[in-house]
Image 1 (cartoon, helix red, strand yellow):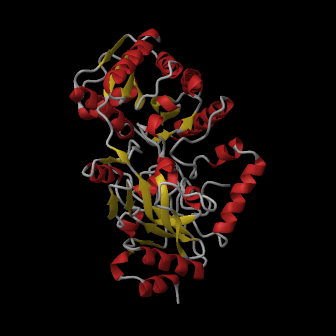
Image 2 (spheres, one colour):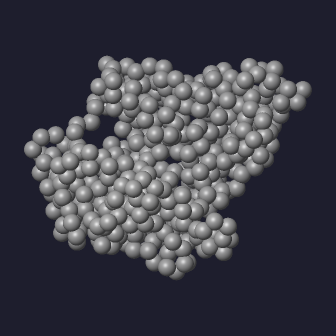
Image 3 (cartoon, one colour):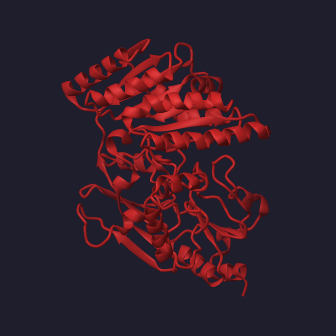
Amino acid sequence: MSLLDLLKSSLPADRLVLDPDVVATYHHDEAEWAPYGAPLVVVRPRAADEVQAVVRACLAHETPVVTRGAGTGLSGGANATAGCVVIALDGMNSIVEIDQLERYAVVEPGVINDDLRTACAEHGLWYPPDPASSPWSTIGGNVATNAGGLCCVKYGVTRDYVLGMQIVTGTGDLVRLGHKTAKGVAGYDLAGLMVGSEGTLGIITEITVKLRPLQDPQRTVAGYFDSIVDAGRAVSAVAAAGLTPSALELIDRQCLLAVDAWKNMGLSVDANVVLLGRVDTPGSIGDQEAEKMHACFSEAGATWAAVSTDAEEADALFAARRLAYPAMERLGPVLTEDVCVPKKHVPEMLSRIEQIGIEFGTTIANIAHAGDGNLHPLLITPHGDDEARARAQAAFATIIDAALELGGTVTGEHGVGLLKKDGLVQELDPVVLSMHRAVKAALDPHGILNPGKVFS
């Protein structure tokens, strides 16, 4: 029996997507220029046992399986390979349980990040990880890439909130990992191992995440700077002052202009770079921290800085930060970086990015989760310009080199996927790289789970 016939006999008919035009929409994620192929079929399961049936069928036919959520990834981690089966988990989108006393939620992988946050808020609870794609990205995808976000400078990344999960293994077994209790130290942390594994070690069919009480009201501090390096100095100054903001975001003029051209928000009139800080410490201590952050901005060279008293205006500034990437995409293909460096090196790294743009004749805009050193240079090229594309790719590699030289890492939250494979080899000791490959071989002995991703 062919693989296609086996899938048809194992699953309800509406789970298989065969229309070539529809299948084409599942070929790749949002990573510019990452290679991809045409899958044999796309399967949209509705339950864990259906995912298990797909994996077992693929094992029988030695066929690769590529798992995806909403397809918002920026590293090529969800890109199809020729002849593979794509499992799209966006239809598994139920919030199974929210436990107010124990402060956890159980969700299927296709739940949208913002939908979970909204549901938790109704119970007086909060799920902190908030990637800029939170209105569209799924919890399963966030777990697969260990996504970060705007508030993660204070509250941590996705890994810090995953208690447990249900997965289908590379051998076709359906198992549970982790725990729901406040503590759980029995055995190896296999649930933690799955976080950030990008579908190479197992297919996640359910996730248990821990929750916090609702966040306290925030004060917003905004600063305008003439240069991106001055803004970087302000970031270092905030860290040196002992402050832990609930957000500290950077947006440069090119991004502001793109957002204004798209949404007419009028944000690019007065600044070359905007730094947005937030403090959620309650009471007078929070007021003092906001004023201290304001002083850091001013002393680092801000042309204007203020603690905002207008919540609507402050929310508009952060909305512009979330819109920056899609706004830049409207101008041409965008190759997105995701390096992370120590906070003390943020000014130096931003300076190097500027110089790399000049060296390679590439337009580079900048947004950043600046408070934790996670920088997202956006390399923009004209449509159809192969020479500009080649220069941008060379600049991309040079930015990775610079981040590693400063003691950084090749990815802070987007994952390795296809775009950062060479960078990972640079970053990891050969022995450590061998350890990674040994784990992959042990948990996916037949090599069918997202082959060719993460490792060369």
